[in-house]
Length: 104
Image (cartoon, rainbow, N blue to C red; front, side, top):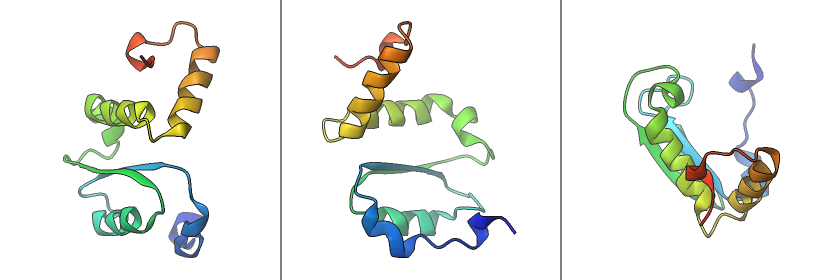
């Protein structure tokens, strides 16, 4: 049985102090919306919680524009030091990084 079916992270949530963005699908069988909502309410630093409509299994591809906009907003957030680190690293790794990702 895969570990995702037996691992319980609830006792370790206090260790997750970095900003965390949660994006889920409304009808995700592996990660039911009610459980993801609970997680968003119990994380110390949940920077955003979004439920994407649609039944596609890989919604992050099927609704890439919506998902990417949420991720870009999270990474640009002034409250997201992790986002600043990621954007800086991405710029160093890829000089041709899409200008829409570059911070102002």
